[in-house]
Image 1 (cartoon, helix red, strand yellow):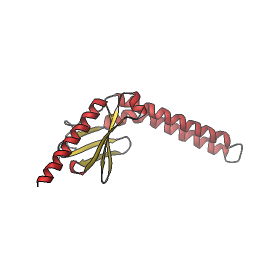
Image 2 (spheres, helix red, strand yellow):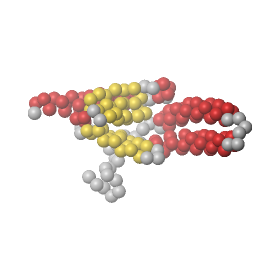
Image 3 (cartoon, helix red, strand yellow):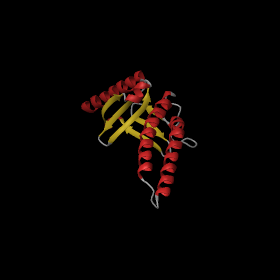
Image 4 (tube, helix red, strand yellow):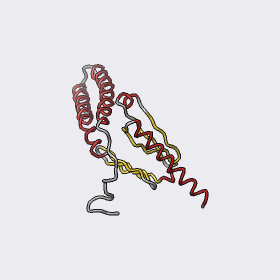
Length: 168
């Protein structure tokens, strides 16, 4: 249904725990450390050539842009992120620069799993990964209990759909 400016009302959507930003900042800090080491190695190895000044300025500028993105991205991602699980679909809206709206019809779901990466585990968070024939969708940065509940709910809904198909 169309509402004034949005495709669907956001009142039934679930939002994330604010700890997701801490997890994102931690992940970005690790990324920045690795990129910083790489940039420093290139910076040092360029030596004194005709283009060394331009290379060094470019490396510093690129690192600064990455740093700004890493500082700004978590709150923007948090503000945009929402998900909905109903009997017909999984609907996830997320993004920082480009906002992605993912619809996964329940009858397309092939596998559901809960994952706990090292950074998310450190912050007490988990992701629900939904595999379909066409790809993978994720509901990210959930509390572990919530992730297990979402995965179980999805499993029950998928089983109902499969049983209904078997009788039809």
